[in-house]
Length: 72
Image (cartoon, rainbow, N blue to C red; front, side, top):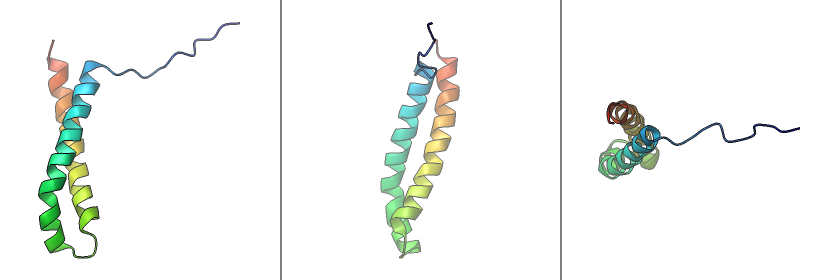
């Protein structure tokens, strides 16, 4: 008996490009958001900066996926 147990999820150029945009957006924004987050929230500045960076990364992934689908 044979089974089709191959991987179901694949990295396409669209997803890879969008993931690169999201990763770049996260790390770029984290550095910029850390200083204002330290001034606004003295208790949890890294958490606040991470949440801001995560929101930017989700937005960058969505935009990157749209742009990459339009490329040949």
